[in-house]
Amino acid sequence: MEEQPLVKIRLILPANVHHRSGGNIYNARLAQSLRSLGAEVLIHELDGGWPSGSSADRRLLADALAGDEVHVRIIDGLIAAGGPAEIEAATAAGHRVWVLLHMAPTEEQPQGSGGLGAATGILCTASGTAEAVRQRGRSNVHVASPGVDRVEELRALPSARRASAAPHFIVVGALLPNKDQILFVEALARIKELPWTAALVGSTEADRSYAEAVQDRISHHGLEKRVEITGELFGSALDGQWRCADLSLLISRSESFGMVVLESLAHGIPVVVRKGTGAVEALGAYGAGEAIDLTAGLDPLEQFLRTWLSDATLRRKWWDAAASASHALPRWEDTARRVLGVVTGP
Image 1 (cartoon, rainbow, N blue to C red):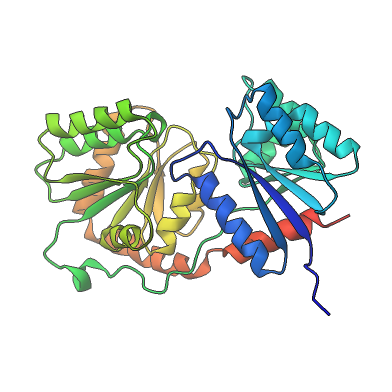
Image 2: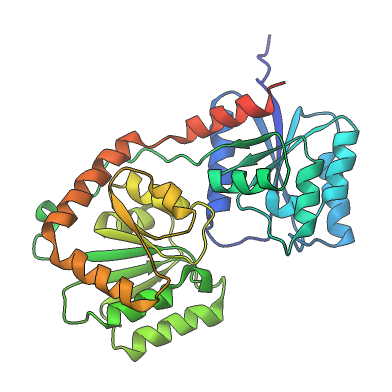
């Protein structure tokens, strides 16, 4: 007799996010890990202008939410923001519809609140997002934090890897104004007399004008031989960048969580994040980095980089803490187990 799946889940995802993003990575790894736990996961990608969505987009959403062949529907928050009526109709028909929220809805997205209120429940990828949703009066809100993949070969410390090489910074994320790569480049331009190299790893297609502006600032300061824009990387190419890195930075103006922080720590690389963003939650209490206050702009970042480059004891302390953190981080299986427990519960 053929063994039946633990549960059948339809995962409804946006098809209009084409660059590597934390949300895309989370969705893909969640699906894979749910399957490894015995769930049957059906991926349903929806084209359209989400989060607003046209009437035609919403008809496709209604179709995706219909039917009795699955037990649970999990819908990405980007789509849920544009389809509150469709979600309400599905739950009224007796379907279990959970919204997977990667970031809290803003006041400018009132339709997002409607979608959340109509859902069976809400899965949030960060505790700050969950708290923001609860403050809007929503109930049945749960946190399912991201996990990491186990990295078998951590990056070697500089003494073992390339003793004579300059420290190497890495910034992983699409070149977008919110990620503030220009601020980083301007800070590097102020410390040209110190030894360092840097790589900006991420899509240059998500916002071509901003990517061009980043390249212009690199050229303006004569940093072409020290700062590399790699474009979007995957697999072994991305792993190669992690192995070369000594410090990772995520200085976005806003972040709900910042999965790249966990990815950095999983590779044994300490991380600097911007104070006041959700990336502080991702950094945790491992002692493998710092949250710095950048409200004053460029000066604090320049001063931090100078301090880190000149303090070998600090660098070694953070490297050791990152190596320890890599073994203590939650795994994607933990995330999937949490999600399963929530969506199949009473």
